[in-house]
Amino acid sequence: MKHTIIAAGLSVFAGAAFAQAPVLTVYTYDSFVSEWGPGPAIEEAFEATCGCDLQFVGAGDGAALLARVRLEGERSEADVVLGLDTNLTAAARDTGLFAPHGLTPEGLTLPVAWDDAEFLPFDWGYFAFVHRAGLEDVPNSFAALAASDISIVIQDPRSSTPGLGLLMWVAAAHGEGAAAIWEGLADNIVTVTPGWSEAYGLFLEGEADMVLSYTTSPAYHLIAEEDAGFAAAGFDEGHYMQVEVAGMLAGTDQPELARDFLRFMLDEGFQSVIPTTNWMYPAALPAEALPEGFETLLTPARPILLSPEEAAAVRDEALATWQAALSR
Image (cartoon, rainbow, N blue to C red; front, side):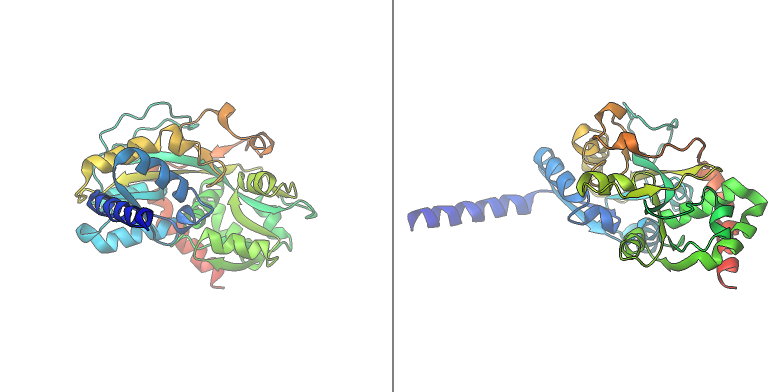
């Protein structure tokens, strides 16, 4: 009984101490905070050093994050937003809601140079259509996909960063020919989901032959499930790159803690979790530190990436083209 009373007392004391810890609220996308995503391990690792209570809040898919922050404005409870990408950073910057991070990132292993006062990268990858290894006549271009009867699931570019990335991919690779590509793809599309998780779930349930995902997605099946039966289709026109970022809000009441989190984001404790939870390439970890199996993944011969300003400039026209093709 005495031990029980002591344990209860310690529990109350620990609870009181935890209640006094500063809270850092990070808005992110749903899959990041899922039990199989990076969130739980990163929360444990950061709280071990910060003396704080790190609280992740899932807010739909990547593009929905910006919509929520824009809607909440200066009243937002978020201190940090994690999960935008470079296709959205120009629009995010224009809201005036994000503050300069004031950090000089070191040890970045991105395949592109980085210079952004408000946003720091935490991972990157290439978009690709993923399929089961037994699929016949795997297309090697958008045109070949459009000419086939292969079914695909994609994501909505208004709520999802992969969906928006696909718009940028088609626009950057085909320019004025983008409308024809989308018109050709329209009858291949089984459905358009709000986010990546729903799309990949439908693909795994057999609802489509291919799903818009990443060249790194087969690593999940290979490493976590010991299943080598998935692959990413290589496209001749190249593959669009996604660089995922985080930024601190100007209205945060925990600016130093928010900055500490952004600094931690590029440390090994965060970066080493990314390959086998978010199944992307970490932004600050050398290739030799990647787990066995990543060496088998498709490496695009032609990486494609629009700058934030270029992506912002073509977004509205690309979205209108996509909507027109899919409404017919």
